[in-house]
Amino acid sequence: MAGAESSGRTGGSAWAWRPVAQDALLARAFHSCTELRGRFYLVGGLLAGGAREPSGDTVVFDPARDQAVQLVAPGGPRRSHHDAASVGGRWLCVVGGWDGSRRLTTVVVLDPEHSTWETWTASPGNCPPAGLSSHTCTRLSDRELRVSGREGGIRTQRRYGSIYTLKLDPGTRTYSYKEDGCHTTSRSGHCAALLQTPGPHPRHQLLLFGGCNSAEPEIAGQWSHGKIKEEPPSAPQLTEKLARLVSSGQGSQRGPQGLRHHSCSVVGPFAVLFGGESLTRARDTICNDLYIYDTRSSPPLWFHFPCADRGLRRMGHRTCLWNDKLYLVGGFGEDGRTASTQVCILDLFI
Image (cartoon, rainbow, N blue to C red):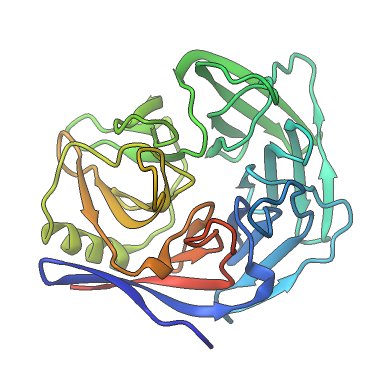
């Protein structure tokens, strides 16, 4: 298989994205990539830069075998710039996104057991956003998602974005949005991380990173200890290696400024961000840097680990945590037009 490791070095420590699979089916950007029952489900996306019409296919990647197959399931949504979450350990819920002509707020659900797509129905009292794209959708429980980010129609972009709770009822195949009464800076192409704060009174916070010129994360929700039952995937070895990596760097209270369409995965007490498009540069806007947000200290610290390999620049990609490994899937490369066909694993050499 073609492809070589691409790495960055800081203070004697190194990190690398190691290719483990390559398939033309994986070449896409602004898709969703969700782990469900040990497989990654890639839904939609744009297959080439400049494309206006998103893909309507679904690709299943098996990380245990490093193999990708196209899922044959009628009624698949044609989407890009959407988000997705697994629910109940059974369903894959695709929320909002661009269908080629408008921004949607609908919920379309895949049942992998029967390879069928269903369009769920809005329940009475549903108060949806005006339209969603490049937003985030974070699972709080099997029946509740937190939606934040870009809101508005094609010609409308609001200065502030609302935070919504999206409630799902698998029994009746219905959903309902409820505005939570709080607002954030209008963000597009940001990421969200549900993290637990340290100290004698721990709580969960949902933090938004990027999607606007600000370098500061924004709180999109916080819950007292015990309110959030969601357990993140266990990754003890990767967590330990990340802890050793940040111990080799110099922490800062200031994060990356003006970054969007990057990836983010929560690994223990860390939020791991990679790549993206810079809003502050006139040239070379697509990035390949690794940022780690460390919540173990108060206040939390940022650690920046640059990469010299221009071939690893990505935007519109996804990272996914499974079996103590962090995977990088898809995205446009340095030219902003060519989608990557590779799946890579983050290696840390400490």
